[in-house]
Length: 40
Image 1 (cartoon, rainbow, N blue to C red):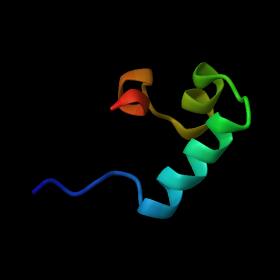
Image 2 (tube, rainbow, N blue to C red; image 1 turned 90 degrees about the vertical axis):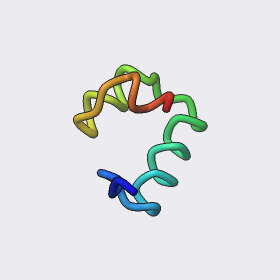
Image 3 (tube, rainbow, N blue to C red; image 1 turned 180 degrees about the vertical axis):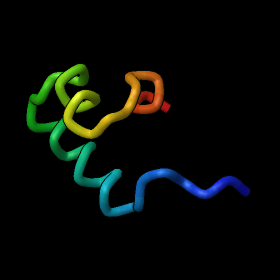
């Protein structure tokens, strides 16, 4: 099984930011990830 690039805590943190209204494009830029990786 492939190892995840982000830890479970990082994923939860990013999703909480998205839930608080930060645009996905801004989140992706801040964390260095593609929008496809976010939605995956």
